Image: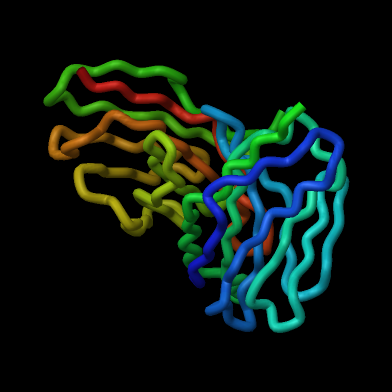
Amino acid sequence: DAKTTQPPSMDCAEGRAANLPCNHSTISGNEYVYWYRQIHSQGPQYIIHGLKNNETNEMASLIITEDRKSSTLILPHATLRDTAVYYCIVRVYPLSGGYQKVTFGTGTKLQVIP
Amino acid sequence: DGGITQSPKYLFRKEGQNVTLSCEQNLNHDAMYWYRQDPGQGLRLIYYSQIVNDFQKGDIAEGYSVSREKKESFPLTVTSAQKNPTAFYLCASRDGLMNTEAFFGQGTRLTVV
């Protein structure tokens, strides 16, 4: 799996958009970008994933650059409940199945400020 | 409701004792994973399993053992050989053949005294 680089921490004012960057410069053509978040002392929660097109769901938007070497997770209106550690990972989608070693980095600690 | 369950949430053991952490899922997922998390750090992969009766070492497998006798269950044993067993342990599962996200349990906080 390609390695990812994220800033260790970020602050965001409540109600504003939170933009969390992730660099994955060694990503290969069949690797997807996934985002998870982990609220303190709980299991990580899936947010969104994408391959090369921008994606949006009820939680967030994912913007992937054209060269796919970086991406940004956007929380459009951050709330205090969005305070968490956000993990960006890249993972191969094996068309024929097979073993999937899913690894996480250290993530970005997002602090939403009232 | 479908989900992945880890038990217990908190576990205390004396140094030198083996301890087994439970992970059960009723999502019919093929793949299951065990991670360890230390304060202020990310998740590190201990073991993972794609199918029943088969599993692979992750990045920090030393001092741990697993079994996958049933699709629903992937217990992790922390042995006395693990030098620093006190940590937060997370289990996850996902559909092995589909490009889907992983679902995580709520974790077990193990404290060895």
